[in-house]
Length: 307
Image 1 (tube, helix red, strand yellow):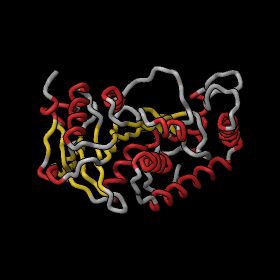
Image 2 (tube, helix red, strand yellow; image 1 turned 135 degrees about the vertical axis):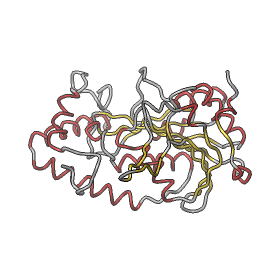
Image 3 (tube, one colour; image 1 turned 90 degrees about the vertical axis):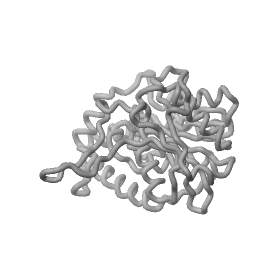
Image 4 (cartoon, one colour; image 1 turned 120 degrees about the vertical axis):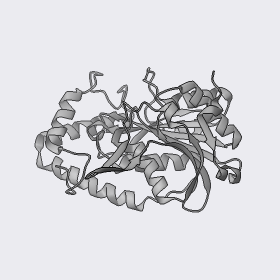
């Protein structure tokens, strides 16, 4: 395997990183239901003091044709080129506790080398633990708390927080491999899979970001400011509820999801919070089509409304 050190460089600020910090990670790419990971990392970098301590080589890890960077065309010339980045930051939480944050794009190439590089960085800084988050769309209602599936070797968190523990094969992402290698080496690691209402998967659902922050706090003891996100979430959910209230079919669909969710959480014999009484998954077309039709949620909020 190629030298993992070829993929990244430590910055001058890396000299001042204390040993034994928690490493928190969230990469955007394969799946980011509800914009959970992108909101999570953007919120941390937008609200907390931070410095760059390591930077990965984008040219070696990114498929530019699949994820093209943004450049601004200003009438007759080009300005403001915004390349994708993958970095490790030293940040401080709301009460000044330092931690490391790995954030940016999920590598398209060299996963084994990238994983070895992350483990090398973790060893260099002697991190206490690694916590990472990602989010997948699931047929669950927006009117209930976002559940999580917990993986890794933190049995305390698995027992207290993991609401769905399937036996299944899943398409992996780069941080799955990082967790797998960390766990194999005996390092402390935990992953949180956020179970986001699939009819909100293509939106920026503030509740998903809140769940990512709360899960990370549970794992690390870090304290994050959340007032702005909570206010955004109240406004977001109020607009959805208004749309649901105005349409009986939509209300029925959400009500069905609520019943299945509540039955599962109360210990019913259902095999998962996703299945109906016959053990079948609800049709994605049934739910998504109806909700897309009536909610008409768009990523952009130019007019501050859902549709």
